[in-house]
Length: 197
Image (cartoon, rainbow, N blue to C red):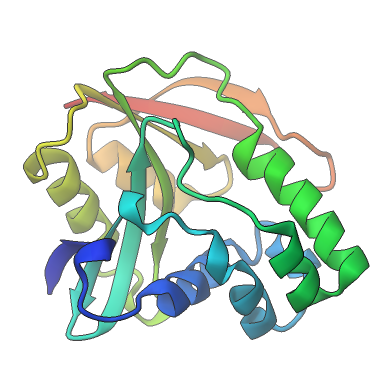
């Protein structure tokens, strides 16, 4: 297993990143976009700003990935026309509005300072979960990539106990929480965790 910045990979990583992202966040709300995960992955593949992404790989297979930014800009960009083309005019428009609201325009309930790296979109391919790959990748990026941050912050939903345990094992501690942005979601709170580099 190797770790690399996604833009340094010698193959087109976008389809794998989108498929893993879709699989990882399907139950958290993406299942409302379409029942077919391949349709969702194809529709969302354009949105990733891969310069912010790091991956654990074996050969040309992405095992897990993460994004780390200072949230200026966020690690994704949404194209309404592409979403409409893939999902149809009405559904594409609704998905664009919802994703912009939830993933781009929803600020953290605290100020992200210049010395903070925001860890986002931690996801592992389904057949590689439970092997410590995401933990190893996150640890490698925070400790060995020489990023310009002295603190790292992240957001996780309250019912994702395996992710919370992973982050706690890496030294993250919850410092605040907010109620879920909608009562129709499958979780009650968004937890915010922080660790010093």
